[in-house]
Length: 535
Image (cartoon, rainbow, N blue to C red):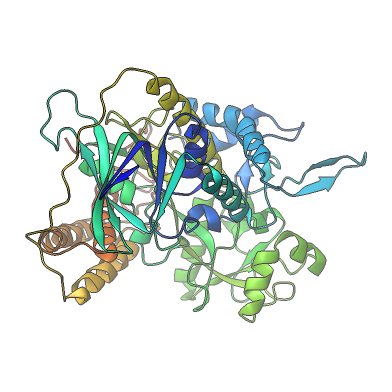
């Protein structure tokens, strides 16, 4: 599968979370698969997901109710076809994962029968969240990872950055443009290698690292979105960045998330003086959708000049808290916070990219042979605001749909991908000015937080655009002249994604869901997705 610095596969999967590994496992009996992971295999958003996965398992619940709740949370911008497709596929996707070994929490009903313990989160009208205590993502990642590593047809390359997609157009070949592989940077030996593949799937996650404060791991730098855009793919709804309302506010817990399931099990939001405030903002109180709760916390912090608000579940019994939230209990206790006796300090943090690379219901992008699944993609499922626990679900459902589509096309006659030119760095030099990258990195994330955050204005967006254009030019010049590095590759992608976010936000002349602007506080009568095209 490897000839010198060129790797060969039928399918290249860029990303190693729930979406990427599910696709790899579904394809492994039919194709040679390479999975590349930017860090270690588990170092993605999937591993750190706490809450759970939404699906209808309760006989009192219905698919129609799941659809209706998702449409409401999406604030009028969901694609109903995508929502219904996802909700109807949800249970079978979870049952496949369970057959692979995923162990979700169970309880005993009144008849003595074991059943899955279903929790409830913001925006859901029923208990429909399957979970593994408060570490569901770890359970999912560990299950998929163990299966992938054991499969002879799956090759995993850890600590590789995807640099750029390779297309027939870039190679100057005639005919319809299609993807034929990618350049990847081997972080261990610091060299760029190539992967030749008939099909490429982006499963790189979101872009929350574009913000100064985020709940995401460090690898969430929008790589797939930026690469797809540079390859000619459209993106949509990039202005909708979900800020999780409750990230732990502590200097030693920079991105530790406090799951929405806490509020689903009765946790209350309080001001520093102990008074509640969510009843003043929404009839659903603490179980309102994330955009509502995040804006309320942001408003109260600014109004009071407070560093944080507080999340309090101490009215529940210690046994209940330690049974349902063992990870959070232990982490907080290690920081000197006993959540069975006192509230947790919280602030909003960038959490999820609701927009992304445009795809159909098979995960297919505008570029032949290129797919995008999971957070990197825009399917129409989330609209203007993602409902809790629909994210891991989207990964599973669309990875399976993508696999079905690729399998059907594998049998079709097709010539082998062309030989790919090796990466040429003969004209570049090593940089001794890492401070330039560090400074640009900090500047980008800070002005995105200040100007393109939870509350926006036209003036703030214009300021952000001027700065992002200046940084983009500077970084491109730097990229052309020096050898690549992890920080440079991520910064190049982040500044591209930042531009897409700002331009999308400037195009939406209304407030809706996660996009709130003081200049246009009311929703438009006939909303639609924001679509940007590089062509």
